[in-house]
Image (cartoon, rainbow, N blue to C red; front, side, top):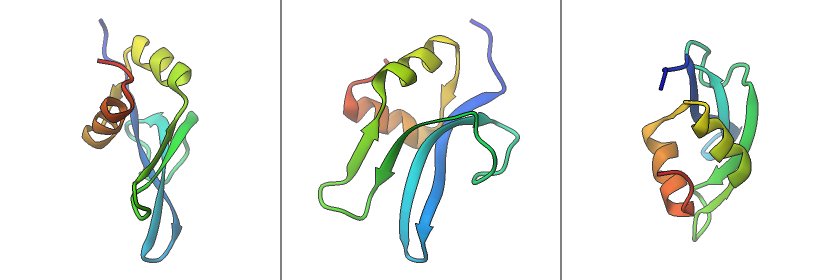
Length: 84
């Protein structure tokens, strides 16, 4: 399987001291909050329990294409039972 220059990672949105993250597929060279290819979900760690919403079909499709998730996104995918 070839490695793409594309990663599945978090992009921060929200106000000061109230982070909300989007789970995005973006070029690995792009800035954290820069341009993304596709938004596939969101994550809010500030609510109890943490809100994790991920489009499983899109995430699986990107993983099959060889996109590497960041460590945090990999953990969130595992919580939701997506991927391996």
